[in-house]
Image (cartoon, rainbow, N blue to C red; front, side):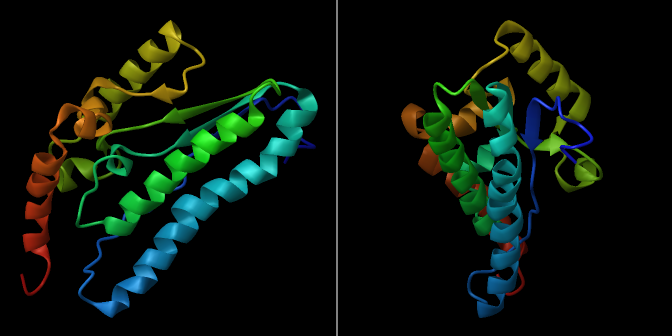
Length: 182
């Protein structure tokens, strides 16, 4: 890959699966392992594959994609939330370790975005074009942010600070009624 693209200077890591889990069922461990392997370890593997190249260039950017759910969990998908919180923490550590090397590290924190068939799954999801327009506008204003937070995700990111965390998690917990036996 790098031999064919020696000038590569931006790596965007967007590893993700969202699996519903019922934590009362010990069988959920399979979904949890798949989620951690894809979302967190997948991100780490891609970063590890390209970091030496970017460091050798002395410049470049790594963009990780976490989720608003990293900051405000959705109880129906607990390991997804944990994995994306892990991506956030890993990104913060990567930024600190690469400081001064010329390699920038940014985190894209999307809210629910209507990709593929998400319109039917979550009618409240932000339309993809709207999301992309806002991201481009934010990056035009600040091309090297530490976090890219569109308006629709700020309530997630700042819920603890704003005192809305418990109420929002309680509202999200209503989705647990969709699990069998609830």
